[in-house]
Image (cartoon, rainbow, N blue to C red; front, side, top):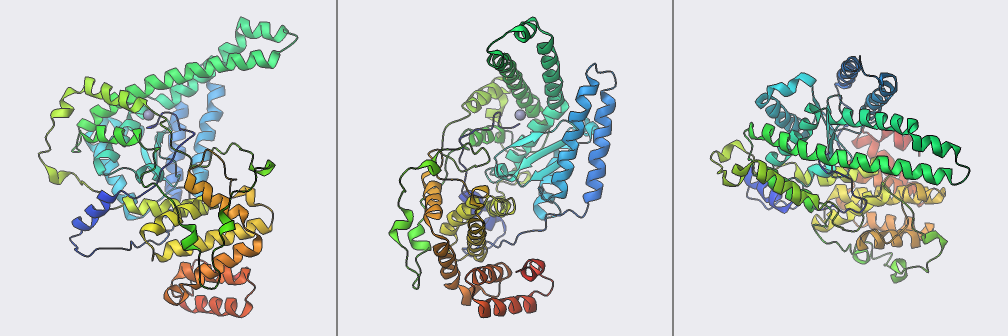
Amino acid sequence: MIIKEIPVKMFFTGVLRNSFVGVFFLLGTFSIAQERDYTPMNYQSTEENLIIEHLQKNLAQSLTRLANHSHREEIIPIYEQRTNTLIEKVKNNHFIFDVPIYDQLQAIFKQILTSNPELKEKKPFLFISRNIWPNAYCLGEGSIVINIGLLRHLENESQIAFVLCHELAHLEEDHANLSIHEHIEDWNQLLESDQFKRLKKQKYNRSESFQRLVKNLNFDHKRHSRTHEAAADALGMSFFLNTKYDPKAAISCLEILDHIDEEKQPASIALEVVFNTPNYPFKKKWTKPKKQGLRAMKRDQPEEAVLDSLKTHPDCQRRIELLYEKFPTIQQVKQEDEKSISNYRSDAPQFDFEIIQACYDFDQLGLSLYYSLKLLEQYPDHVYLRAMIGKSLYSIYQASKEHRLDEYLPLPSSHQTVAYRKLLRFIHNLRLDELKKINYHFLETRKEQFAKEEEYLLALILSNSAMENQAATKRYIEAYQTQFPTGKYTLLISLL
Ligand SMILES: [Zn+2]
């Protein structure tokens, strides 16, 4: 993994302004582009069968390497499950394929492999995951995964290349598989240990003693993983130095990782402004904290990414020091051939939109709403963002109506950022009736402007159907069918 332990407390957001400026510079246009086009892509790969075939071949190859392993029987199901999970994810649109971003990243990946031909032996394959955690990892059978949650933070191709080199080093050193093997061996050792045998005879506190034994085991694994990380940085760096990319990007990349849990654009979303409409003015009581009751009890929500900032991986600084020790020349490198490196990434801002779509598609409605509102501060007239706010609010309304809100939206809690907590409090304070009205009036304010856009039209259809405005719903549905006869929401609309 590029980030060793996924921090529990983490916050990430924001567009890299520099790259944004760079994009337009590179495109040679002088217009100040306020809006950035974004249309959700088709996440189904046209080469799905080929990819699955490749994954199955890689699995078969990993299994043959196990031929003489003493714990073969125990390892095989773990390998199989790993590949099957990946295949399921491919089928369920967890990855990005077939778009220019995909080609750009594959080109970087290919560039690294061409500069380091020995890496080709394990037939590595790069996946771009729609996961919003800022992370990348290597699965051990050949797959390298980089999350959009990390990509949106990286500033240039060289930094991406460094991350990929680090993961390829894990692959080359077989770290993921070794961890599995070590775990199984340690586990077997534990079961055969005198301590465990004594424990079995114990009359009382057996589970406590067992937990202590397991805890020691886990602690050891953490130590192993630290050595793996240092090794992957060093070997990854040597792969990286063989490429055309800027060596200094290794350092700037680790600096970014060091601060990745900090909020880039301290956000206070002006709910009072966004949702204040002429026909349905904002009520102050909507954002007032409720008296703490049982409902507000803190829960464990590991999937919730918008959490308060906390410095969680101080070891990035140590990793930088180690790199300097091992590769003292990095500091002196002069970039001779500036043109060989893309200094700015044209795709970075796109990922800020991609995470919104991913949150929405994977039912994290609090987050799709939150990220949309945040980005709306930057692009106040963005049709996709406005439509997404409408769609998220509609889904929240539906979930609330069916008493299933807790499946899609967490309760406000102290480990979230102030802005996210405020948003959640606002949503939880609203009555059903208020929720649908806020959404309806929010969308109404721009209907003249955006009713011809597919996403916005869908949001209008949904909000009007929630309001039981039958005539308007019918009118919008007809408009949709005329404008988008083969539209992607045709089926959804027919079910209303
Ligand atoms: Zn790593």
